[in-house]
Amino acid sequence: MPADRRPRAIALMGPTASGKTALAIEWAQRLSGEIVSVDSALVYRGLDIGAAKPDAALQAAVPHHLLDVRDPWQTYSAAEFAADARTAIDGILARGRVPILAGGTGLYFSALLDGLAEMPPADPAIRADIAAQAETVGWPALHRQLAGIDPLAAARIHATDPQRIQRALEVHRLTGKPISHWQAQPAGPRLPLRVLKLVLAPAARAVLHERIARRFDAMLAEGFLDEVRHLRALPQMQAVAAPLDLPAVRAVGYRQAWEHLEGLTDAASFREKAIQATRQLAKRQLTWLRGELDARWFDPERDGGQLEQALAAFFATKGAGVPATGV
Image (cartoon, helix red, strand yellow):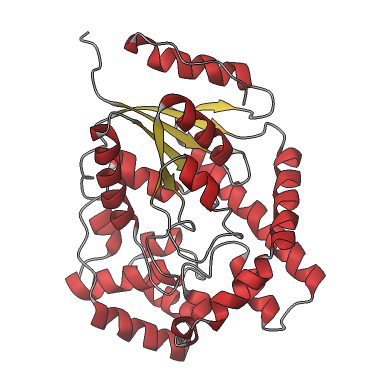
């Protein structure tokens, strides 16, 4: 069998709060790498503390891509992410550096690594009409409408996910065919790289839960609520009829903070709801990751040596060793 001569990339995947960012930065510094964020919250400007975005010092130390590419009142699709990420990766490879794909958004990883089926373009007028209808009848009612049009899509899309409900209804109105029909078409080309897929996940769920709670309390101490107050005060956000339906505001922690600042919860309930929502996100991420059969799993707190071995073996054919250090 001929040698695989495709350029190499590393995919550091895992649930939230599992240590992906810290390891990605460490490896990028060691390997002359650049980080491509695979995170649906980090694409938004102003989502910094609550999204655990690398600070200015870390971004200066290691080049990062796909951070702050949209304003919080805008949307950003998986197809747009995949196109932008491939452009970033091409640039990284052209500079002779290693792309390190780090994040926990499964849909973004799938779109980037495996490709997406070609979909009809967005239609602003139809989207506006659907949004206006949602203001009148509510998104659960539109989800029931979707179930009558496309039961397969409705089964996959939660009734509280307005962005995906809107897109599914938009596609049907545009083409007369359900979105599940389009999704079943052959996907676009896979990413033409040799990718080392590594999952960071504590073996004990209680450890992950503790890390999530500890990190959220640190975010509160850093001024997370002030960050959300600033977002709420932006004129563009105030002009949105249903800000809680925006993808940026639906990011875990932000929705709960937004509702708390509206007086719907007290401080203790806000903290509890935000931590619980983050744990539920981690559970969904782990469920998706179990379907990545070619990914190797490591406990970040006890498998440092095995991670190093996996990294060294991946780059062994380059003829240069990988400096050893712990995680």
